[in-house]
Length: 285
Image (cartoon, rainbow, N blue to C red; front, side):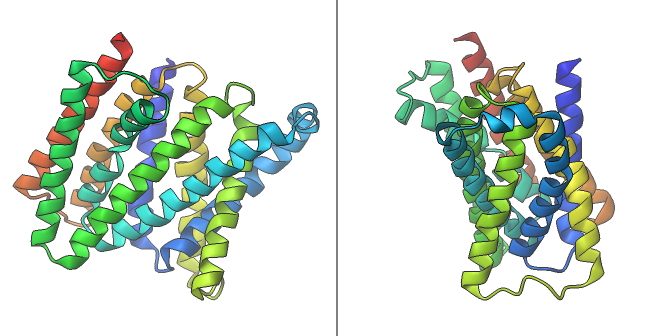
C-alpha cells in the first residue's frame, strides 16, 4: 500500500512539467510562488498539530533542513528552466539521474562501497545521459544547455534527498518539509533579487499554475516522497520515481505533441535501466 501511495506521488509530481509549459513567468518566480504557497498551506497545520515538536527544535536540527531547502530551491530553478529549453521527455529523464548522483555521493562522502553491479549501473546511467545530451546538442545550443540544466537539477535534488534522509530520522515529515519549502522560497527570492528579476506583475495564469504545483506536485508529490523515506528505502523510492519520465512523456505527447526521437528513447531507456539496476543492487547489499 505504501508503495502505491508513493507511485501516486510520482504521477502528481510529473504534472510540474506540464504546468511549467503553461506558465509565462521566469523559472525563479514560479519556484518562489510554488514554495510560498506550499509553506503557507503547511504552516497552520504545523503550528497547531506539531507545536510541541516546533518548541523542541534546536539549531542542530534546523540548519540541515535549511541546507536541504537551498538545494531544493536550486533544483526547481534549474529543472524548470530546462523545461523551457529542451524537450519535456529529455528534461524529466535527465533530472531523474538523481539516483546516479546519490550513488556517487554515497561512495565519495559516506565511503560506501559500490558493488560490481552498482558500478555497471552507474556506467549505464552515465552512458544514457551522454546519449540524451548528445541528441540535445543536435537540436541546437539551447537544447544542449537545457539538458545540462536538467543534470544540474538532478545533482541538487540528490543532495536534497541525502540530507533529508538524515533529517527525517529526528523530525516529522510536516515540520521538515515546512522548513525546507520556506528556505527554498528564500533561496530563489535572493537569486531573483540579485539578478534583477521582478517578483510580481505577471499574468494571472502564473499564480494558478503555481497553486496547482503547490497542491499536486509539492503537497501530493514531494511531501509523499519525504513521508515514504520514513518507511521505504531510498533506493526503492528512487526505483518508483523512474515512472515519472513515462508520465511526462505521455503528457508531452498528448498535450504538446512532442514525440521523442529514437535516440532520446534509447538514451532514456538506458538511464532508467541503469538506475533500476543500481537500486536493486543497493537493496540487496
